[in-house]
Image (cartoon, rainbow, N blue to C red):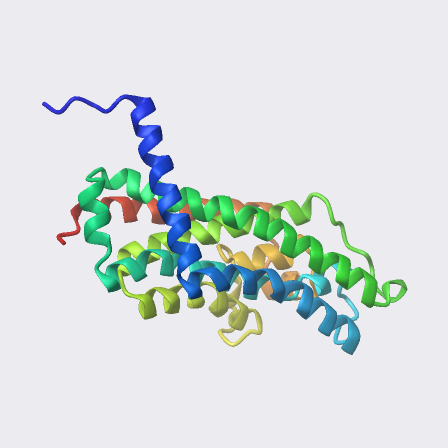
Length: 259
């Protein structure tokens, strides 16, 4: 019977694996630039929306300012998926697992890294977008929107989407496929919100991060006739539960992958 590793030893292994993941991110151009792109998109689109006046009468300043958040979430999801799939594509996952046969710790390190990166990224991106939006949108014409605690719930979408990206990366082990699934997860509910799917769009948005953003930012896209009456916080709970469920499934698959 195998003796369990001491907890302090396990912690040291995870820290070493996390350092390795961070080195990999810094050394790969795509993995280094995608978080920067996710950081830039929300304030940039907030400036565009505000300067062009492309708001609906029912919009809030907060909702209009965070227009680009869903796109930033898609970038974060693709980035976290690529952290996994690039290793499978290049074959570097083999020496990683040879050096650390505890596959659960390898996956845990990847999950911790994407969470620790995505939380401050989401906080800075959404805060910057709101400040830019408030500066350029003619606020007397629109309701301000309830910033707190809504913006904190929106920030929570970032680590949830990042964990989903890791899970999709493990389950598919293909960069194009994983990025496509993440993109569909973020984009299809937005298409459905435009009623391309009829009444089905209300169900498609129940567990969609983009719907959480719309509801918590009080966007006009979150009207009950478009997304239903379920609030942003219950939707966030569904998103988080879905991410944890996908990660749990990915862990079981990761343990059984034959390399």
